[in-house]
Image (tube, rainbow, N blue to C red; front, side):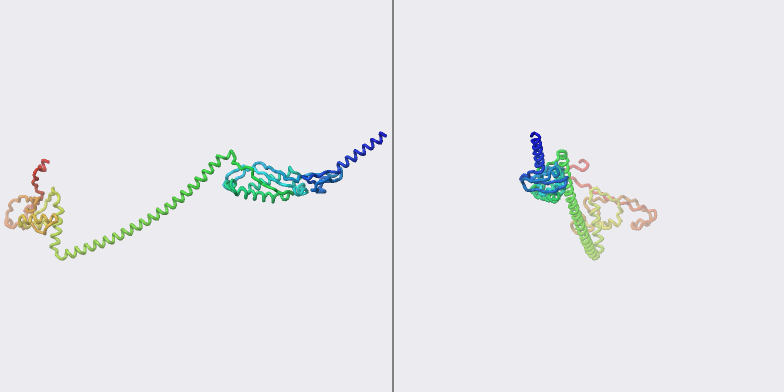
Length: 366
């Protein structure tokens, strides 16, 4: 009896083991893949009690719910050469357990592969964006681009991507100062470029103005030279016409101009021959005081053109040194010099001493 009970108990145990290995339950949040010696045999996505071959087949369960992938922080270089530490996360669901098993095997493998794909998409998309775009409303469009790239890359894993987000985007602590230096150098480069452009434009304007100035001055000088030459030609022609009317008057007028220039200074001293050509108009010693006054006025620029003697010019003293007697018949002919005669004595013209005005001391006393 005991032996039968033992056998019955053993049979019950065996049946229990067989049933436990043959039956399995698929919950509402799960989906299963039946494997036989590692090869997939059946995909079960409906919940309930399912049957499999005991000890030969195994069941691999996968979640139907949304799964999360939290990739490690990725340092990304943006389009404006700034660095950001990007912390992102991904939400996905398993839609094809067989393909999921064949590509990534399990959820751990899926997390690794999806994290790698996500970081690559982040580098590609954010590498073409600036920091301002990442931190502005353009960030939503960037997320859509990243999610689209991740979906295209993970379709072969048997999953569907529900969402891709950037949790944080921070500047690396070790590169904050370098970022500031780079920003400063960038601004300085732009300032230098603008300054160089301004200097170039200034040089162009300055050179154009200088060229115009040179042209204007040259034209003005040319016109001035032409006008001056025409004026000189007209003056010479008029003077020549006037002088040709009376050559003697012209010689007399030029001599008076020479007197006016030569006898202006008070201390003028001239040593000349009284019979020289310079004093030819002083040979007429007549005329009296009125003639001398008229000649003085003429020398000073006023009055008519008289021909007084030198003794009639106020302020001019004519000194003629004494000449000894000349022997021989030529003594009665002073204009015909003979051999042995002394040369004509020079004439010294010195300004006469003017009487001091009332109340003034003589020049020597002053």
